[in-house]
Image (cartoon, rainbow, N blue to C red; front, side):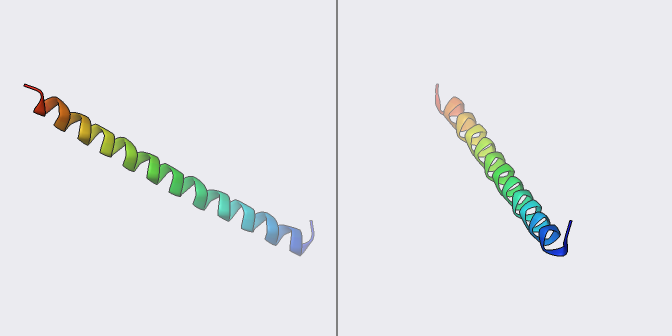
Length: 46
């Protein structure tokens, strides 16, 4: 594997890792928000 190919592969892995971290963070945020809203809705129902 030449130097340029190695750079491209490393760049792709880097982008993929960034994407996974961002996606996981967003998903976690949505899950927490949904749980928070559900708790408030349950508390609001008499």
